[in-house]
Image (tube, rainbow, N blue to C red; front, side, top):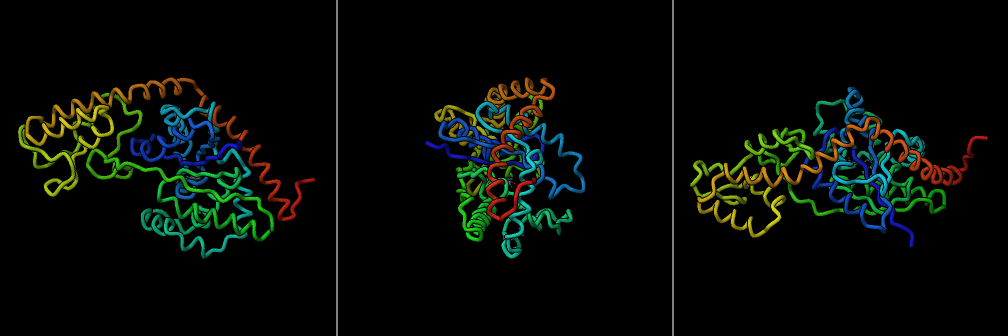
Length: 342
Ligand code: TRP
């Protein structure tokens, strides 16, 4: 049976945090380990340039840091094709061709585009490249005939555009060259940051996947807890409720990292009764998280000592990706009656 082609991408933003892990990476690992899938995971560095073109100097080191985290969590280049978008030039040619057939109105009405323009207010984003972001993303997906695209909810409009562009191309040139991909939305548990808000780099409230031991300890110490629990023996409200609408960050992490449901149940009870103080509860959390993150840290260290390893992985992945993408592009050129160079 033909394998499902699963493709996803991430803009290189540097080290990844536990929110990224819960939101995307844990799902990627699951998909990679299902033998019916051929996965391709892409470093979307041209997409990074759409918003960071004024200051591109960080992109290169962000790529290294991000891919080290991919390796640390167990994504495996032996099972999966990792590649770098800008090293597979076919993406630029297909994006250009698709831009010819994509009506401007489709791009202008895209809700993610409208939201981002507001959110990234400080940046000058009235550019062709930024408006065309989803066209490049469509090229990323269609070049490989991806059937499934694991993404977060914010990416659904981009995926719908990809489907519309594929349909329009097939219709215009009367060939069914492109496959319409499906989104794979996974259930994403809410990961709160150390201040109780959603974990996000822009809030400065993250814990990194490879957070170093001492920093992990420090961050857990400053974690948001029930503001009404001031003394250790005050009764606390570990979950969001009328008294503590934000809930307690420490408890929400116990729910992820404590393996025994039973223990968490007891923990919740003791907190509510005032027999468990926040300091002890945080110490316990440190033990759990440190144990979970330790092997990731070690794996990351191992790969980061192998100089040039990340680039080597990306290079061979990109060559493979390029040979797959090249086949699609040949059919595309034929469909629009362009011939390969003589
Ligand atoms: N736009 C995606 C994001 O910001 C990244 C991305 C680029 C992507 N190309 C892709 C995701 C192709 C899935 C498929 O998260």
